[in-house]
Length: 422
Image (cartoon, rainbow, N blue to C red; front, top):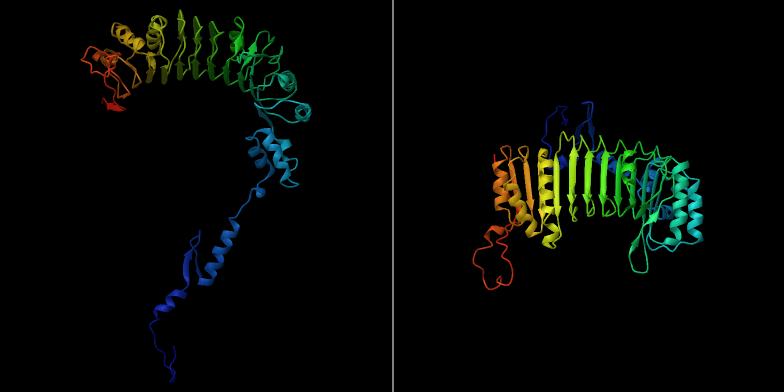
């Protein structure tokens, strides 16, 4: 600052001047840009404007992908948004109809005729009205033969006058031209005479409440050499199960109560889950060629007559021998009788190969004292042991109080406890 005589002097800036002091901000390249307070406000305002994107700013390919996750009816309702959205849903490569309460009619037929000429990759039909089942199945048959469908999910259940579910037959040769299929889900369908089958590229198979005649399921599995996931649920019509699935990684069997024998060659199996199956007493169960089994789950949820379970516990005990290579075992059982007999069988089973178990979890099991002792003696590599809601049946001879005198004494339950053996 210059004085009246021409000399200069240095003055200390006041505190108020710091508010207008320019900001020094380095950029990505290391250069320093000096911004005033007004410039900083303008930059922040512009940055907020730039960040305000809307869904209309997305390209059509992204919007079509988003619509593919919606049921087809809801995707079609987006046509009223604007002119751009009017026909956008028609490019979705998926037909998803969840019409449990739909009563069919001309509109449904007209809609399917429109989709008949569309580009499809996924078909999901969840219908319960028998009036529309026949026409929909015929349309699916056409789509499987003329479209490159990658995912087929058919849930076709209807009820008769006794309120019982009745399966629906699939047309012959529906799987004769299915080279593009990757996922096959059948619920409430009937497999009787499906003719030629070509499912060479299928990765996932899920059958629930499927009525199978004879060994047709084995023939279907033989046509899926590349399957990685197999789920079989509520399938009492499956008596003998036999298949060679070299790439199978996950296996789930649930409530296959009438199964008498099962032989699966699954060298790459990693996860197996068996739940409430083999109630009638299976005679033969074998998983062949397992190399690196990671997780095994044995779940028994329902109580019942001891005569039914008398032969079942031996089946599960033999199953434990087969799954002895697993690194993690989870056992869940709510039947007092079957769990107590498990402990007796396993305690006497000196040949059981369970030395590879690294994690064992017992959930809702009764009568496990001898069961635990027998396992711990055979598990030198065990690192963690979990207990959850356990009742010790070995204390059944202990004195009872008045409240428990009318029933069996299940001992004392305790919450989840994890022991680190190492």
